[in-house]
Image (tube, rainbow over all chains, first blue to last red; front, side, top):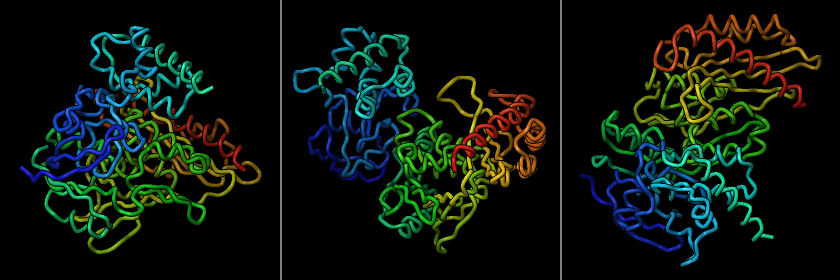
Length: 161
Length: 288
C-alpha cells in the first residue's frame, strides 16, 4: 500500500485537509474522509453521473478523479447546493415535480443541472437533455427531471431580473 | 487501485524521468486510464499527472495555427470560439466523446494515446494534418498524429515519452472540415464507424486539397489518400462523391463485433465519408 498523501483543497467554500492514498478516488475521499456522502457511487466508471461534482468550475465524475489531484483545487458537491436551511430552486423544483423516486441519482443530477444553469441560464429542453445525458436515472424516465430543471431555470431567470 | 503511486511533476522533463519507471503511466483527464486501472486491465504502477506541467492545459494561437496542451479538457475546445470557427470538425469530434462530465476531463492527447481504433477525435486530427510534440528522455520531437497508434491500445511512444501538445496547422481561406460517426443511439456510445474530411477550395470553387480519415474500420485510424484524390479537382459533384465512397470502402479492413459487421462498417464508411465531405464543403464555402 502506497503512502498516504496530505491534501489541502476547498470544498463547498471551506478549506479542508485530509490524508489520501494515491489510488483513492475523489469520490471515496469526499465520502469516507470528509463525511460528504451525498455524492454516490453508481458505476465507478464515469458512465452514470451519480458522483458528479464541480471541480474548479468544471462538471466531472468524482469517481474518475484521484483525490490527490484535488490538491489546491475547488470542489463543489451537492452538500453545498442549499443555502443553509433554504433549498436551491433546483432542489425545490425537484420536490414539486416529484423528479425522483429512489433518489440515488438525484445528487448527481442536481449538481449537473446547477452546472448547466451556471453556464446557460436559458437552455432549451433539448440542450438540457443533452447536458444531462451523462446522468442515468432508472426510476423516473427523465421527463419529470427535465420539467423540474426547466422550471428551476425559469425561476432563476426571474430572480435575476 | 490501492497499489498505485502518484506524482504531479511541474516540468515536462521531470514527468519524462518519472515515466521511465516500470508500469508508469501519464495521467491527463483519466477517463480511460483510471477506468482501466480499476478494472485491472492495466497493472498498477506510478501515475504521472501531467496537469501541473506549464502548457499542459490551454489553447494558444501561434503562426496562424493552434497549440493545444495535452491535458486540455474537451469542453475547453468548444468554449474557444476562434478554434471552433477554424476547426469545426476537430471540435465536433472531440465533443462527441462521452458526457458533459467526461468532457470536463477527457483530452485529445489522451484519446490519441489510448490508441483505440474508434477514438472519435483521431480521424478529425489526422484529416486536419495535426502533429504532436512528444517529450522523452532523449529530448523533444514532433510527429504526425497518425504515427502514434500502431494497433489497438498500442502506441509508438518509447519508454519515458509522452505527448505534451497537439498542433493544428494554419489553414488557407476557403477550408472546412467535418467529422461524423455512426452509433445506434444519439449520445454516449463508441463509434461503429467514424469519418473525417478536411478540404480546401480554390477561387473557382474547385477542391484544391483534401484529406480523408476513417475510424473503427482497421486496427488504427486510417488516412486514405485515394479517397482524398477522389475529391481533388472536383466541385464535389455526384461522380466525385461516388469515387470518394468507393475509395473509402476499399480502404476498410474492419472486424465484425457486437457493434457492427465487416459488411456494415464498410458500407457505412462510404456513406459517412460522403456526408462529411458535403458538410466540410459547405463550411469551406462559408469561410472566406
